[in-house]
Image 1 (cartoon, one colour):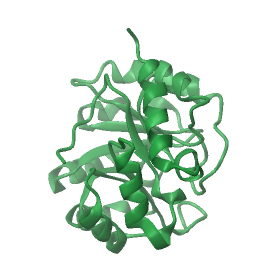
Image 2 (cartoon, rainbow, N blue to C red; image 1 turned 30 degrees about the vertical axis):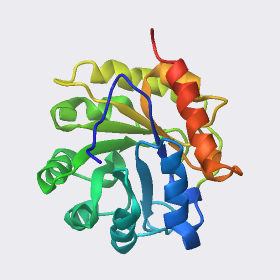
Image 3 (cartoon, one colour; image 1 turned 135 degrees about the horizontal axis):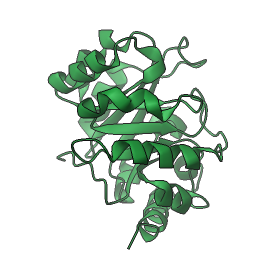
Image 4 (tube, rainbow, N blue to C red; image 1 turned 180 degrees about the vertical axis):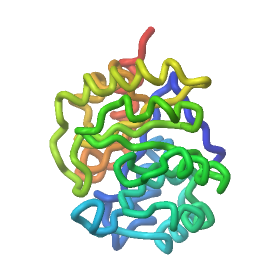
Length: 230
């Protein structure tokens, strides 16, 4: 599927961090049946965040079975060393943490020249203004609404204000830059984050923690789309 990022429609990106790793192919297929737009892949190294997950070989395997673009979120130190490998493995989108790279513009340029869409990630305590000088280099921005490292955490309420500040900043970008949000999103709060400016919604436990992940994705998309400005 061709990757299309929209700043006007709601896209759902189920996170496989909450899936059954023994049955990833099955769990990816389930959310695709429900209308998932992207498959969110959390890569953690045990250094930048206190958890270890998966790497390039799993992304390569996912690419063989997924029919939706792979949205790879690098929660790792020294991401520049691995960007080209992840793109070759099948990543359509790669996001890196502002806090993890000393030369953000160069890293974003590397992602784009390698063939993927480039995103910058903001931790809950990282101000939106850190993106002010890379607006030309962004394809999307990922706002963390929990502290990264583990699934199943509760949404940090002040993230709504953060979304609004990021949206105001991105209004000055030379082209539309959608905002992605990750952490504690479900049907109970998706309308709030969409109203605040988020358009790509990462959901893990709210999808894979239910008896029917396909139905959960459909419900999230319906609730999010209903909150779009008319």
